[in-house]
Image (spheres, rainbow, N blue to C red):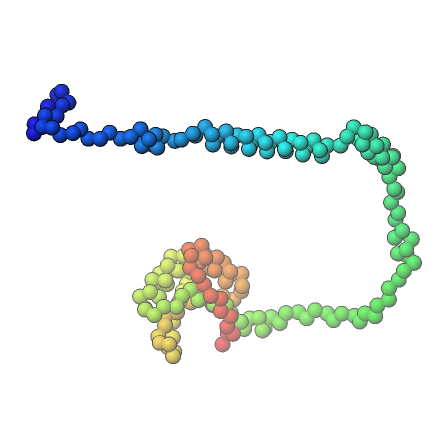
Length: 193
């Protein structure tokens, strides 16, 4: 069953493999691709033509334009004059209201204001090391933090406080420094002992 590849002939009586039918080859190529494009183009042209006809139908006829222009000329030539009746009506009217004299605004009690101080809580941690780390960050910002230990029903906590601040402006300045370093703070208002 030797085969001679140079000449392309078989020697042992085997048949050559069947060739594909011409219909199978034609299926690989797109069938009538021009027909689909023709239908698409015809639809687009029809749409453009119908839109143009609709546009022409909305245009005014030449005779209608003259009447509109004449009507506009009459309106422009005689605009209505504004009436200002309130000059005469307001002096004739009067409103009587019984008003009691207002009490003087009470000055702020400076003694009560001095008894209140502001604190900023910069964190609350379960571990002493975490609280010390936050305290070190705040020291680098030039602030004076304190760490206080609090025990309660939910365990032991280490809280980092800034302050006390005597005024809201000093507290706001410290809060803006901590906010610039992405440290959230909680404002606490306490009375001074």
